[in-house]
Image (cartoon, rainbow, N blue to C red; front, top):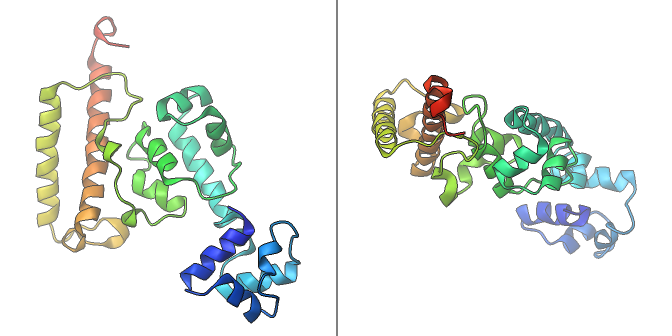
Length: 232
């Protein structure tokens, strides 16, 4: 996203037009529109940043640059030693984009769909889940609709589950959720108790638990199945 678009997005949040904001700052109403071609002075950039209470990095990159370090670290953690080629295949993301994400060549907010695909390929679900990954990337995950394909078991696992195993997991999941909802002392996201969570939050929790249980079951099957019977 360009500098002008980033500033315009901030103006939109305050329900003011970019032209009016530019005039309020003491510049011509079309002055900011030229900043993508003619970079503004540091003083002007700082003045805009102070007005919106954001950093210069936020104006330039669309989000705070220190997030790039955090999200790159987490993406590589989820990659979990896989080659870029294997990671691209497992996530369905273009290899060039995978290379950029894993090396911190990030100059705008990572698309939500891309983050969803990365989260779905996580081999260690208790290390970082979908909600945490989106949060680190700069999103409020609780306000993001859950994609239809989020219920699909992670595509990186090699052992499929039988219908009976899927039913057992579904039954156990419902028991866990029922117990959690009846436990007033338990809290989850941002310290919010179960009875204070809306339906979307509860669905996010359900999907996170489901994915974790599916992966755990698949890993257990692979561990205790003799190699000659495994489907590699």
